[in-house]
Length: 72
Image (cartoon, one colour):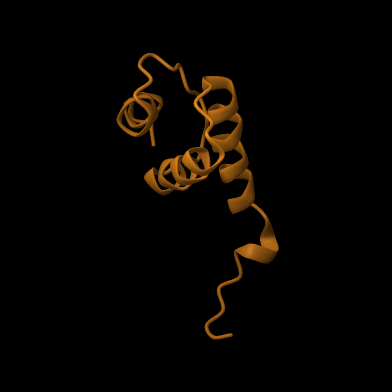
């Protein structure tokens, strides 16, 4: 997702314009996940939302969570 796309997603999911996001590796799924968490935790602050988005990207980089295995 480009920076422009990420900022449009921030507006779409959270209603925050001109967020100036610059996080590499974001996907629409990250925004969806963070939106659900933020609604549950009643978080609306841009700084905290940005932190949560960065954490989602970091979670995807954990090798143990990205094994290409099938089954249980």
